[in-house]
Length: 408
Image (cartoon, rainbow, N blue to C red; front, side, top):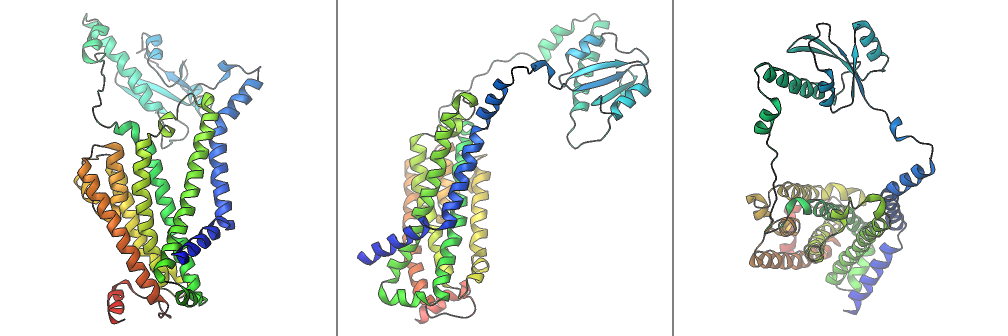
């Protein structure tokens, strides 16, 4: 057990003193700190500019050419045009020239009561000018048509579009409110597993390529070595993740006034959700870390790590996509099945716990399967790690592992 402690301590120090680890952590902390401080900086700059005039903000202006005088109440049309202002033109050439010179954002030419043209300089992918006028002119046309028949348009509007009052009484979990922080936590875990899994695999492959592995195997048990490496990497990853999350939370609350509570739903994560995430997330992280460690032992050169880890990486990406898709419907069959499979349960079950309702026995079954599977994968990885000391040359294929282990 003393050997395990020595390996674990060495691996933790190796990660925490690693320049890549320190620089990446610093960059993440700085990015989050600067990003969450932007509203405060903007507010400070605005307060310094006392001569600024709020009314000087650019308001989109659109031209209207109505040669037949079809619009009798232009003010009503303008009231319902939500995008900006409408300026009336009596000359088509002037309207087109102003659109060309970008004085106008666009223009409308009324051909007859239900036919008009939209004049624009460039037809952008996202141009709301057409929809805005279509809505405003439709309301104007309806009002005019009803009034011609002696019907009060406002009364008809109240019947067709009643002002409904609705309240949502949530008896279980509020999936919409929990969506943001659930996704952030899942993406953080995804990032950790991908990054540290590759680091663990590369570290093992490096030891093998320079023959350090052979010396380590003769001095201590392979179980201690692989568990020390994986848990050391897991600890470093958790330290980095916690630092980033805590930095974001502290900086946000320091700038809470500027944010006006807009991101409270992201940072006010319930303690029970954090506990569930920690439990399932750490186990899932260790589960995949063992797999990546074993894959590193199957290659002789660090250049072969990416190719060897590709199948596992693809599986992990699929697991992430299933969990993200399942956030839209936590009662879906696919997500429920995934919450019992060790490869995906650490994410899928967390989604169900955070955004849906799960019976205690379901959580117990899923957690038990994940714990047993993680221990088994750790034991199996130790076997592969020891086998790896004898395997040099081309990377060992996954399908050949059972045969090799059986022959030893």
